[in-house]
Each structure stands twice: as structure tokens, then as C-alpha cells.
Image 1 (cartoon, rainbow, N blue to C red):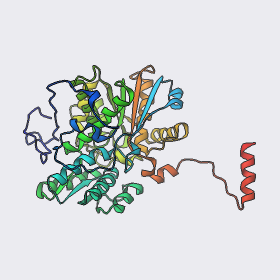
Image 2: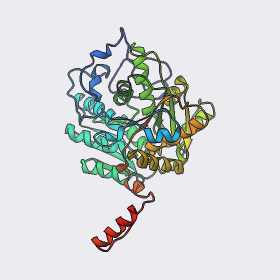
Image 3: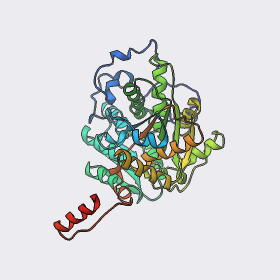
Length: 397
């Protein structure tokens, strides 16, 4: 991110000059013939734009192709003419992480690594374990002890990953993975400091364009380690650089108030980051205090004319309930943060009610069943079938 260029390498992740994560840049010598791209919506439909060797055998679980759902009831409630939800929770392991993992594990096997390793707040570990199993390679995941939602931890265990629980936060787990990657070349690191993994996540932008038939005016993304918002922005920029579109969306990143170093940095001018040493939020997927891709994320927001804001846990939980009960879309708390953010953006008039807006719902509600089950519900107890019938009659009378 310091502006220096390096020869591309699948095993180079951090710039030797500034020590920040590298970025993979494509050069377009002619316009992309978008209509000629074959296949149904999926990550690998866009293989010609994903820099993976042609001879590499793809490791896939049919990721991507997630629905872009028109949100009529929530849209009407907010007074938005066109609101869409990109529901990434319908990827194979229930989150957007599968898009990057299919690319990363494909490269790991092609390069001859014995396995992969990741630090995780949950979703990355679930995805890494599943794709490693698919590829018949080892998977090691490092997690902050006691801070990973049960649904996500169970996935990593089910798929056979070796789980290391470290005292501390996600940032401590990530430090362990980075240090291990410097010492050993046997396990391929697949956190978002690996820029090749993000090449899979940029396909969210491609799919939004394919599904809408245009570029939206605004895109709202939950932000944890900050790789996804920069990847999506990269995807949209490549559409423009390749001559497919003439316009770009404004990118809005949202963090939870208890884990909002980027939102605070943005408010302060966006030049430095003050980490949150003990981040706390109900939205465990974005409970990260030292996002490694912070420079990329702030650059994406600034270049696009967007913003980075924070919302409270109560606002997140209210948005989660709203999506579920008005639209039938069950998301984990972090995925509801964009709706909470959008409410604030409408109040401040940063987003107009006449614009086409897309919110990225990154993970399924079943990722965090405890939080999903904590919402107030109408529950009755019946001692017999006949008593249940009486309750039903009262409810419909």
C-alpha cells in the first residue's frame, strides 16, 4: 500500500517496505467482453479474472451464486425505492468466506503445501476446515478462547480441523498465524493478509452487477479485519477498468461500537489507526480490534466517496430481528449491522431514498444460534394436543 510494485508471487503476502498486506492488481489491455463470460453465477464463472494458474485443479463446493433479494417490506419501512440484500449466508458453509477459501485452497494444493492455517473469529475457520477436507489437506485454526460462536466452532470441528484456542483476542490468534507462516512453509496461511484469497471475495461485486444489470449507488458492508470491503471495491473498480461499466458505487463500512477502530480512524481523518485492545460486541464476526487491512478499507471508502461508521449492539440486534421478521432472512449479528448502518445513513442523508442500495449480509443466522434464539418470541406451553388446539384457536380468533 506504499505504492511500490513487486513481481507477483503466490507466497508473498506483506510488503517488505511498509509491512502492510499486498494487493493483486490486474492489467487490462483491452475491454472485457462481459457477455462472453460463460456459465451460471458462481465464483469460478469469473475464472478469467481470477489470477490462478490454468493448470490448477479447482477445489470447489459450488460457492457463489448467492441471491440478491429485493427487500420490499424493509425498503418500504425505510422509504427506500430499491433496497437489495446480497445474502452471502447461502454459501456452502454459511458465509462469504467460501469465496476466498475456494481460491486460497486451490492455490495451496497447487503449490504443494501440506495444508492451510487460519486465525478466526469463527467463519474463516468453518470455511477453511470444509475446503481443506474437500482438498484432502490438513487444516489448523487458531481461535480466541471462549469467543467463537458455537455454530462456527462446531463446523470447524466437524470438518476435522485441528483447533488451537489461544488466550486473548482474534488479534492474538492472527499474530500466531503470521509468525508461524514466517517460520514454516508447510502450511499456507489463508487469512485476509493473503491477497490471493481476496481475489475470490471480489466476485461479490461481479455478481451484484450481473444480477442488477447495473452498478448500485451504494453498498454497505460489515467490517472486521477489513478485507471484504476492499475486495468488493476492487471488483467494482475492475469492472470499470475493464470497460464494462462507467460508474462506481459509494462504499460504506460498518463496525460495532465496541470494536470500531476503523470508524474512529475515519472520524479522525483516516490517516492512522488506534487499535482496540479488548474489542467487545455481540457481533462476534467483526469483533476485531486491529484490522490488518485497515489501509485498504479506508482507501476504498475514501476513493468511493463513502464513509465508515459504527452502530451499537442494540441497533444490530434490532436490525437482525427486522430482517428476519419482515423479510424472512435470517442473518448472524454482524450481517445485520449494514441495515443498522443504513438507517443512520438515511438520517444523515448520505444515502438517498431514491438510490439503488445493496447491503451485504455476510453470514447465516445459524452461525450464532444462541443470539438468534435470544430474541423475544411468542412461546406457549401445552400439556396435550387438545390444549395446543385451544391455544391455536385463541391466536386466530
